Length: 375
Image 1 (cartoon, rainbow, N blue to C red):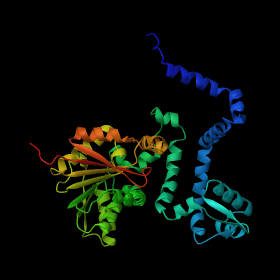
Image 2 (image 1 turned 90 degrees about the vertical axis):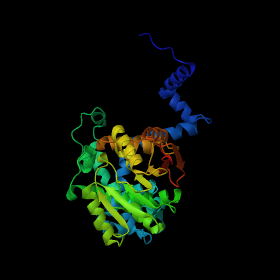
Image 3 (image 1 turned 135 degrees about the horizontal axis):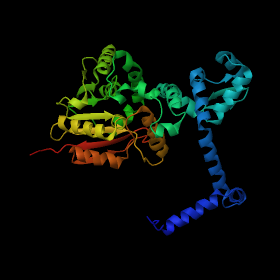
Image 4 (image 1 turned 45 degrees about the vertical axis):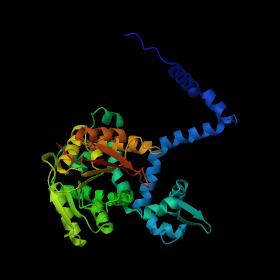
């Protein structure tokens, strides 16, 4: 076939890229007053992409050494930190300076180090620390990203960690690690979802894929009226019932085990899917939305809460991080809000709208309505 004629915009872009690729132009742009700030910013951004793995490993070392917890009560001198961390003073200082450069710590007078804002935020969010530890599996799976993209990689560690991604329900032993991680990470976003959605008028809320109940626990703390049901795979629902019983919520939250492929229980006027849809490939995700539609009464509501691709200001989170994480997991993909709206329409929902959240990087919320009357 003859080549497709390119547009002026395409030819301009190709010329511009050839220009930027020239080492001589890069040196000139780095010194010219009108371009040097852009050139230096781009140089830093490119280096950060190359060095990102090292930055992540610095953070991992801080977490494993419990450094942020040690500094939570105030700055500590380097020599004392060295003894607490069981490192030589030189290696301790190397770690501290690396963490300082990443905005995790700050150097203070008297050869002391304390928490910076990012380090302090980590102290208050243990779910992040759990995810950082968990990333050891992801790093191993991404050792050969091309093989992963081509489907030539060996069974991944993440696929084994999340057995449901391969359609395996699992038993109490196999679901325990991921159920605990889901609970810890869900706590990060539960309050954001509840701040965005008014559930005060809900009569019966069912959280599908609710894990060990972190989201429903937050709902119960905020709203006294609605009945609450957790639906998940049988082994997960059993763990949730035990955990919620120990926290005094066993009578408030009903835990039901099952598989959405066989349908969802009816009776709830609101169904929530908190970070569930993006775990499934298109066919399974569409089946889940159809199951939710069938389970809801006329006028019922479906809430989808998850990080989404294409989120302004957080594009790498949805497209890069979750894109490759879910690829390694073996199931699911991040979707844009407009894709989810189309899938909701195909499932039968007639109206969707987005609720603004405090931290859209972590979660966005779509609300879909089932028509109030059906023929």
